[in-house]
Amino acid sequence: MAEELAYVVQGMRSPELEIKMKAKRTCYDRYRAYIENEISIDFVAPINHDWITDILDLIPHQLQYVERAQMENMINLMLNEINRDYYDAVRKAILDYVLKDETERYRIGIMETFEEVKDYGENLFAGIEPDDDWREHVNLARDEIA
Image 1 (tube, rainbow, N blue to C red):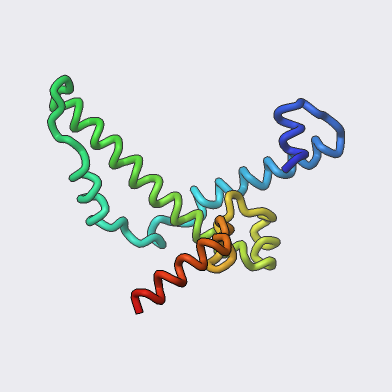
Image 2: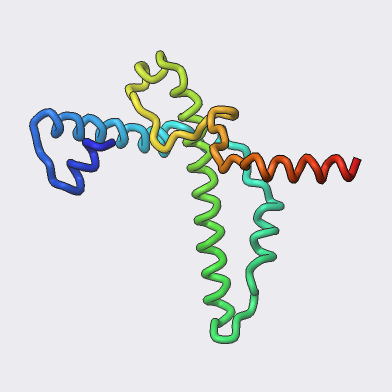
């Protein structure tokens, strides 16, 4: 990651870095192409129509300064974008799942997953830990309720 940043932002160049960046670009292009061309939308569950209905309910259907035809066109464009993004996201999830298997990575020729989602339980919450005073206060309040 630091090498990529140095390459793109700072313009650092070296033969080794050029090879790495070219390989990463090839891998990314293959990854995107696989999502777009190799995983058919027939394998994806249809988008939930309740979601679309809920989205449409949030849109004001008449705006004072926007003509009806223009508003309908904007809504159609938005719905097309939502539909496309949904199918792309699910196909990406399918590919990411397949790439969890190392033999599949080698077979497909994609050695890296981009913007990988953590499995359940891997992304542990690292929030603020309460201090002893807060814990004592909570315990006293709990005792009073009981």
